[in-house]
Image (tube, rainbow, N blue to C red; front, side, top):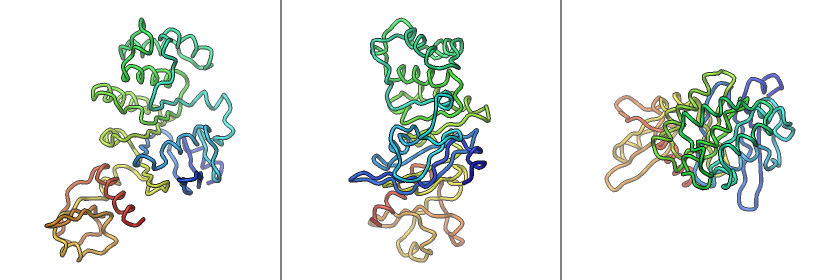
Length: 290
């Protein structure tokens, strides 16, 4: 991918490898178009957090390149970081601080800090201003962190399990917030989450990583249209071309398979497959091959 193409994307991961003693992030490549939300899925230990740390230059790749807003992630200066919003799985603000303390610090940290916008955010989402952060619920801490991430000139928002542990009402509020954020075509979101139903609601693209390898990165609607769940006998499944089957569960009296619908012969009916089905069946197939 040349320099001009890289500038067309909010984030590019280009043949990135990172070795550890017991794990390797293995030559992964994908790109997030501007104005879109990409969900990043995979089991625990698949490499999601490692990838996000590489994106944010918290660790360095052994080979390959990552680009954030068109800039090599290892060379990001304060002007690039001004446009990055980051929400990790825990709020890392000191527990003794209050919202007012946070406002004071952020004004000094970000040149583009919008204090009026932050005040409106805090009021709209009922974040307490008269209590210390250590007294907040998890949902309130994550709302505060989201507010900080959005109230400067953020163009790329990176979230790592930011909605886990929230009650459904708060999660729904945060999903609406992300959808509102990308109404600006220069804004993009990269979100890692185990709550796949949330990603089905908001994502344009899904990247799936398993065992350090990228299994696929594709348009969400195309993925959900491509796959189906077929149920039947083992004998009927044996009549299918192997290329039509993405994963199988075998039971005493039959089978359940994730299939490529376009490769099925006439007469094989399927049910809809969600992201959870796709991830579980692919994990099962990859596990059988290892």
